[in-house]
Figure 1 (cartoon, helix red, strand yellow):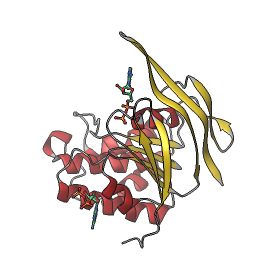
Figure 2 (cartoon, protein in one colour):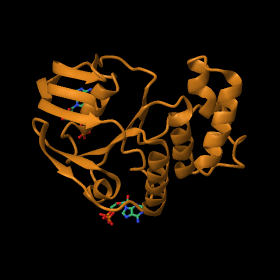
Figure 3 (cartoon, rainbow, N blue to C red):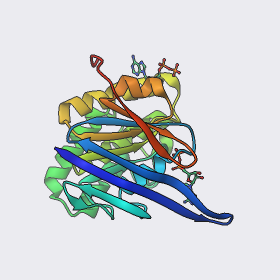
Length: 226
Ligand code: ADP
Ligand code: ADP
C-alpha cells in the first residue's frame, strides 16, 4: 500500500558559498496508483525531492524506500520525464520510443508492438518516421511521454513535463496524461508550480515551502475526474 516512503529526508548541496539545505526533514508516503503533485515556489526543492525518488541524487540523511527496498539508484520500474524532452536528433520518433526497450534488452517483437501502440496513444500516429527537429515542442513531449511508458515502469516521476508548452497544448497534454493514468493505474509524482494544475490532476498535493525546503502540508483533492 505504501509504495514510496520517505522519512526525515534531508538534502544538502555543497556550493561555492557553502552548504545549501535544499530539503529539510521531509517525510511522506505515496500509495500505489496515486497521482501526487509537488507544488511550491521556485527553489523549494521539488526537483531535488523528485531526483531522490528517481535515484538520481544521493540523500544526505533519512530513509527512502520503494516497496520497502532502499531507493538509492535509478531503476527500470521508475520512469523520469523532464520539462524538455531529451530526444536523439538523428533518430526517428519510433527509434526514440524504442530506446528504453533496447537498453533494457526487452523482447524486440513485443516492444515493436507496444511502442507502435504508444505512439498512437499519445496522438503521434503518422509521425513515426519523423525526426525530432521536424516536430513541435508539444509533439516532442508526446514522444517523451510514449518513451516514458515504453518499458512499462510502475512509477512515473514527471518534473514540469508540460511546463514549457503553451497553455492550450499543456491542457491537452494534461488531459492525455489523466487518460493514460486512469487506464494504466500507474503511480504518478508530478512537479508543478501551478496550483490550478495540481488541483486539476491530483489525488493529493504536497505543498512545499522554500529555504530550507520543507513539506508544509498535504492537501487531499476530491474532485470528479474529467
Ligand atoms: P525547485 O525544483 O522547487 O525549483 P530545486 O530542487 O531545483 O527546487 O532546488 C532547491 C534548492 O537547491 C535551490 O536553492 C537550488 O538552487 C539548490 N540546488 C538544486 N540543485 C542543486 C545542485 N545540483 N547544486 C547546488 N544547489 C542546487
Ligand atoms: P492558470 O490560468 O493560472 O493557469 P487555471 O486554474 O485556469 O490556472 O489552470 C491551471 C492549469 O490546470 C492549466 O494550465 C492546466 O494545466 C490545468 N487545467 C485546468 N483546467 C483544465 C482542463 N479543462 N483541461 C486540462 N487541463 C486543465
